[in-house]
Length: 134
Length: 162
Image 1 (cartoon, rainbow over the protein chains, first blue to last red):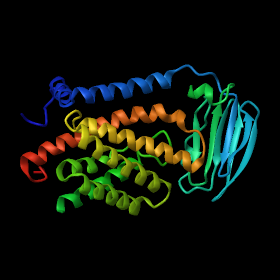
Image 2: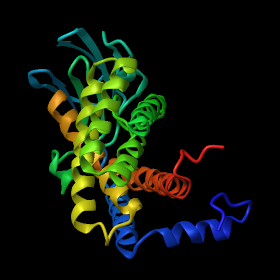
Image 3: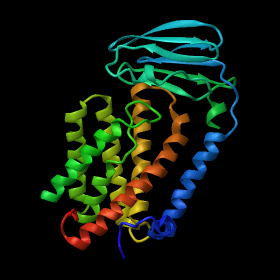
Image 4: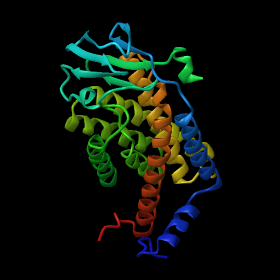
């Protein structure tokens, strides 16, 4: 029983499947199915962008009205741009700029964060966060 | 001792690799480095596995810096060790290495999500499905890798590398 198969994908997959116990399979299937159902559950379009700073929520603005917000964090000022149904972080004093590269958020529950500067931007639906977390 | 050191180094190397992969939230990791913890858990037991988890997180921090990524890595890595040791200890006959690994990945990802929530004080729970999905995939990959590694190590008694 060689460990490295040569090309026989079918039997390799069967060997992998046989490695799993029934409990493994239930755990894996449950995890994948529940997350899929949750991810594709219908959600309404976003209405409000919530901007959170190190002291908690600091602003809730309409995502359709163009606006630029300056948020103060421990490292300096993070700039958030809202408008056209979306919100994004356009500049931040953090070292890696992962938040800027994350791009815009549009749908309720989507979130972009700058962890070093403690800033987060999320989208809220018409009925508030419960619309997402039901 | 040498094997444990190799596991620590391997785990840290996987941390480096992971930090360059895409993920749903900045600074989080998908948990492939848990393979070092799993191998140590199955080959040497819970206590050595704890030290492998701690040391590979510290070594990863030396290379990647002790910023938010380190906090998430440490929290996720050590929580995953705890749950994996518990599941293996109590339900070790029910779940294989792969099942234990999935539990570890699940814990790793949920812990990171909680830590992000504490760091930025905002509702990041909408990312839960993505994190659960990722846990299923990476937990399985990591578990199969660990299973493969364990078979090699148990058969050969060496690292199995020729």
